[in-house]
Image (cartoon, rainbow, N blue to C red):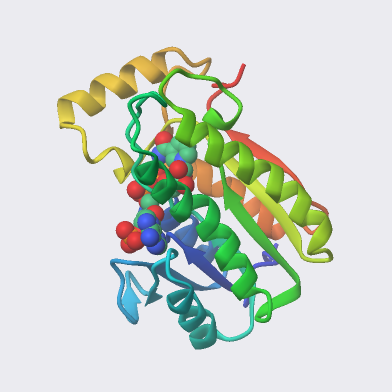
Length: 234
Ligand SMILES: NC(=O)c1ccc[n+]([C@@H]2O[C@H](COP(=O)([O-])OP(=O)(O)OC[C@H]3O[C@@H](n4cnc5c(N)ncnc54)[C@H](OP(=O)(O)O)[C@@H]3O)[C@@H](O)[C@H]2O)c1
């Protein structure tokens, strides 16, 4: 069966790495024209897909991205900062604000600037994370960003209709987000986190990408939060 993504244009902001790169690959495999965007990309071609530079903290940069692509059908937003776990008491709030600026404000900035170009029957897929609904000491930044993203996803599903808005909430996924750890630390963290889950392991980017594909393809899905976390919220 032909995918509803066939021939559609999909912009993946955060497509330069991890979950975003996996979404781009999955959408392209279904016949979509994919545009990858991220700070480390330049205008050209990355692994056979169109690439464009963007910094989500800079409105002019986002505007340039949307103008260069023109009309498109699906916006996927996976950009996220590297956040260090720290208590509120230990945190420099300017640093926390910069983290919110990338993932939460960046997504709102991107949506606002995308609207004139986004097809009326298209969709927006945002990214939260299980810490939005799982209280853990030292994680107030991720909890705040992800909880707000999920609330706004539902609110925007009403406000932007008939465009559809969904949120994908990953659990612990093996991506370059953990590149700051040594190989030994990373494997130990994955073994501990995965061992505590019903599925017994952490997730892979391709497994989470399937949620974004569902959100883009399914015309009856809006205002949803799709948990792909190996049972981490149970
Ligand atoms: N991996 C997990 O365990 C996990 C769990 C829960 C939630 N998540 C969420 O899933 C999303 C994707 O994470 P990931 O694991 O795929 O991490 P990743 O591989 O580190 O990817 C992060 C992406 O964010 C982009 N980015 C960061 N700052 C940006 C900026 N100022 N402008 C534009 N793009 C920017 C990066 O692109 P450039 O460097 O090219 O700009 C990169 O493509 C994030 O929102 C993360 O919070 C991940």
